Picture 1 (cartoon, rainbow, N blue to C red):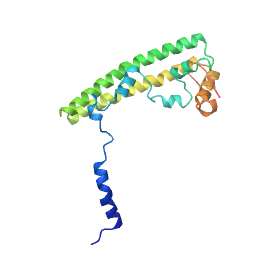
Picture 2: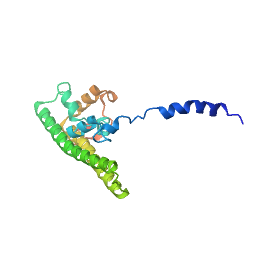
Picture 3: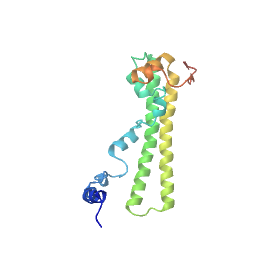
Picture 4: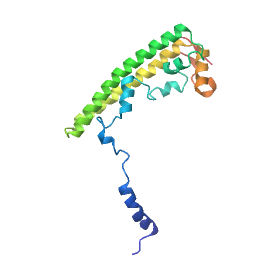
Length: 183
């Protein structure tokens, strides 16, 4: 029986697949294999890591960018001070939770590395990590709610416009926390 053209092509290509380096090559040298040094630094610093995009992209400003745009959106000195406190509190809370995620990931990595992991242990560890990640996201999203309450409608519209979102019009309607109304 003669091989088809497809089968022949697969025979020619297969060695290339077999010899292709894994996208994970080099990750086995990391202290915690599931987390890069950058991810660990982000977790410890309480950085957003995209966790608050649901708020940010729907017109709920975050403190880091509000601080960056302070003069452009007309922040008062009192608003700036409150935003800086909000940012520091968020980073502290998220950083504490991030440190716990790192420790949980380290323990999971060790359990796999020393082959002591069991299905029950795995379920408990991944549930713990997921809960901590959810808490970090909650901290970031709640901070966006609190930030919006510190600003007026014009400042939020200017923020959205300057950030390039929907021509400056927040995507949500109704009343913001703090009683600010958006149209």
